[in-house]
Structures are given as structure tokens and as C-alpha cells.
Length: 169
Ligand SMILES: C[S@@+](CC[C@H](N)C(=O)[O-])C[C@H]1O[C@@H](n2cnc3c(N)ncnc32)[C@H](O)[C@@H]1O
Image (cartoon, rainbow, N blue to C red; front, top):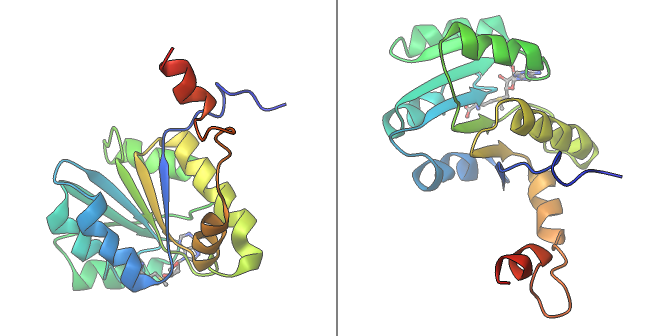
């Protein structure tokens, strides 16, 4: 039986359908005090758009070739090689760069949009929410957005969740 305390994650998950929506979220979710991690930055096209909106952004990708090209194209931005599924490497990267907290994480990795990848997507989100505890993770995944649209949390017969009912006592 899952334990409520154990699973109380505070991270919000924002599912976007395509790269246009993914970039559109910057204005709504990123503020100038934020340190942002982008996972799957490819050549840094979104990283460079995040940069003026926040205090610091680090673009990462599993491909060394992509990172070499991103560094060449945008020398003013920070880039590093990272395999998204290597949680230990993500923690080490934060330590190496002396980053205490990633406030927002952007994820745009190939293969996360198809319906069959939904479980991988949810595992990845839960892993980053647990180990790096960002305020929000913005992810490009059409299947996650579709799934989220189908979900509705049960809030009791009167429409009030148990949590808010307890708070109002
Ligand atoms: C669609 S591109 C990203 C585009 C980029 N975010 C942008 O806005 O221009 C997907 C990227 O995911 C990267 N990728 C695939 N698997 C990955 C993994 N396990 N960890 C990190 N990046 C990965 C690929 O190398 C590729 O560069």
C-alpha cells in the first residue's frame, strides 16, 4: 500500500503536445530567479530561448555531437552531456556545477510522445520529481498530455477533497 507521506511530491507536471507548446510555456512557467535544466536540448534551440527568461540554464543531451554543436552555436549558454535515465549522473552534474536547486526542468527527448512510451514518461517524471525536487517539470509528450486530459482526481461527493476538508476544520 503506498504511503501518503512517501509519495507527497510537490512538483507540477506540465504536458505539452509539440515543440511550439513546449516553448510557449517559458513565458508562463519560468521566472528570472529560476535555475533551469533542459534534458534533450539537441542543438540548444530551446535552451537559448530559456536563457533570457531565467537566472541560469543548463542544456543537456545524451549525444556528444549535439552538445558540441550547441556549444559552437551558442557559446554564451551552458551545455553538458547527460543521459536522462542516469539519475546518478543528473545529481552529480548539479553538484559539479554547484547548483543547489533546479527550479524548473524542461524535457524534450525523442521517443516520449507515443502512447507506448507513457510508462517510461511517468517513471522519468517521478524520478526527477523525487531526486531533484523541482517546482515544475515541463515535458514534450503528446501521450502524457492526452492521458492527463482523461484524468480527473476524485474529490468526494460534494466536490471537496479530503485534504481541503481537513484544512477547513
Ligand atoms: C526532439 S530533440 C530535442 C529538441 C530540443 N529540445 C529543441 O527544443 O530544439 C530530442 C533530443 O533528445 C535526445 N535524447 C534522446 N534520448 C535521450 C536520453 N536518454 N537522454 C538525453 N537526451 C536524449 C536526442 O539526442 C535529441 O537531441
